[in-house]
Image (cartoon, rainbow, N blue to C red):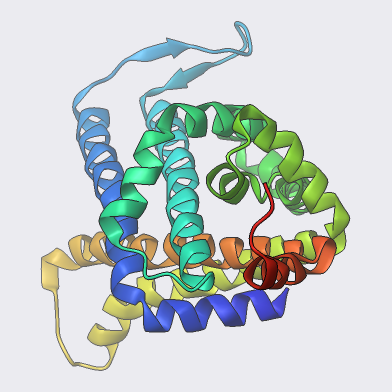
Length: 275
C-alpha cells in the first residue's frame, strides 16, 4: 500500500511533465465546463423536479453542484485510465508518449463511460441525496458514510487500470472487483491513505494565497477570491493525477502479489510470451 504511493511519487517526480500535461488534456475541459456552469448558475433562477418525489427540489445551486460532481468524477475516471496506460508502459520498460496514451484513452471512451456508470451510479445517487439533505443530517452521518464510501470504492478501485491494461471490455468491472478482493484490506487502506494525502495536498495548495498575504510577500486586495479559486483549480491539476498514478501503481502491486505478475513477465522474457 505505502510502497505503491512511494513508487508512484518517484514516477511522478521523474515524469511529472508527461503525467500532468496528459492529465490536463482531460482536466482543462472539465474546468472550463465548471466555470461556464458557475456563470449560468448565477445568471439563471430555475427549478428542477426532484428525483425523490414532491418533498423537495433541486435548485440552481444544488443542480450546479451535482453536475460539477458528475463531471469531476468522470474526468477522474479518464485520468485514471490515462495514468494506468502511461504507468504500465513505463514500468514495463517502455518510453510512453503523451499523444499515444491520450489516444488509447480516447479510443476506449465509450467503454470507459460504461464502466464509470456501472461503478459510480451509487456514488452519484448518494451525492444527490446529500446535496438535498440539511447540514445537520450530513454532519451526523458523515463519518459513517465516509467509511462506507471507502469500502465500496475499494471494490471498484482498479476498474480503470483493468480496462486499459487487460482489454476485457465490460468484464473489466467484475475482474477489477475480483482482483481487489484478493487484497481487500490493502485496497481499503489504500483508499483511506490516498484520500488523506489528497486532502492534505489540496489543503496546502489552496492555502498558499492566504500564506503569501500573511507573510507580506504579496497582497491580492479585492482579487483575493480570484486567486483562491485559481489555487483550488491548480490543486486539482496536481491532486487528481497523483491519485491516478498511485492507483495504477497499486494495480501493478496487487497483480504482482496476488498473481505473480513479475514471475510471468520474467518467464515471457526468457521463453517468449505464450499465446
